Length: 258
Image (cartoon, rainbow, N blue to C red; front, top):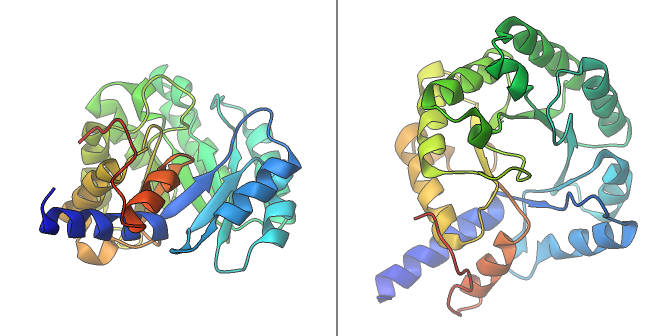
């Protein structure tokens, strides 16, 4: 790699670190796992944007982290049923435990079944209940399949005043892809909502991947949108590659969508 290439990769790594939601959403997560996650979130190269955990770990994470690192937790996760009481209970638990952000799964199977009004009402109720917390709506783009469905889900999330539209839970076969990101970013740009953001999640493991999504976000939303207020990455493994690149070593990631 050329000197300019190394410099570009390091710049992307710094941006990805600042925009990273360091995530642990394993079924068997323990308090010790979350303690380790919170320690990792405060790297020698700087802090991540947020940690993302199950609602039951929000209070622990909030107590372990400085206020500058947000605590996010998931709702209606990962299956995305059309189950409003469950989603609202998750939101309430997150808020009461001191969480800052909610990552809620859009009922994508209901959307595929044509229940557009029901999905819109679900998102509206979740948005109302979650204020003033940041709301990220996970559309599960890999399950929606077509760009038309991805665009429709993105519009529904934005119509409900979501702060971010997020690709995936990371629990399905297809996570974030450049094609899905392009469709979502196009809809965010067309919405005219100057504060709405994009989150790539699911299979984002390399700085090269992050660099691709950063470039897409900048092209669609402008350079001013490349910050944690409008761009996030949801990942557990990405931080390893970020730290390798920022320490002056080569990328350790073995795969890249770019």
